[in-house]
Image (cartoon, rainbow, N blue to C red; front, side, top):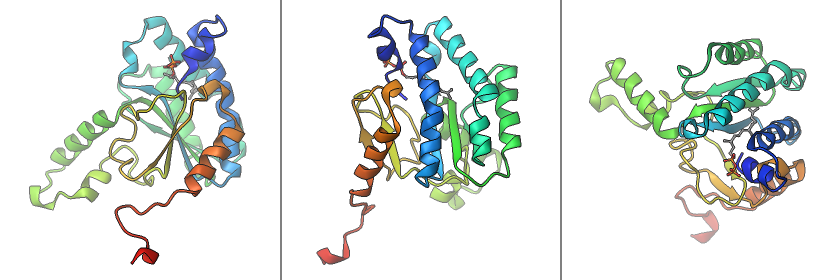
Length: 223
Ligand code: FPP
């Protein structure tokens, strides 16, 4: 969800105003994604590298996440959505962690869209954590395969993403779903996150639907 800072500075507003606007539009996007039949939607809200930002921005973002979890996710619940979390939990404040865990528990049985909140998430960190889990399990070296790694990631039951959207014109994936994105389709748009709309999501999904996903294979008609 990139471009909040630029959205704010173009309006001579503080960066946090961009993040607030980004949080507001997220609700509608989640709802629209549910209407499109999307089953999993992950949002990269704070990376392992984002701690390097000014302390007011970091604490403002953490307060925004907590506020959002406590006040704004009723719509997710009323649509039978489920909240998941991906990231390191040990650096979050106790109150934010409680808000995350309460929401995860309250929506555990829901069968609608799964909203995956990636906070203090980094793909490399996720792989480091997976390696630690595998070693701690005492697995035999020769028994370790791709499935062992997939099953040791933060959310082993969640399928790999089909489509990754990056807003604001940046052409990188910046440590997002590093392992899981091996065959994801990438979609880049110049739209800044606070300007992203249901129509923007429709356009991304239409672009995805027009792609030819061979995953290393060859289409039958080409033989
Ligand atoms: C990157 O844009 C954005 C972030 C680091 C924060 C994303 C957080 C939100 C959209 C808040 C909503 C999330 C939840 C779950 C309530 P940037 O600030 O780096 O933008 P810039 O590149 O224009 O400076």
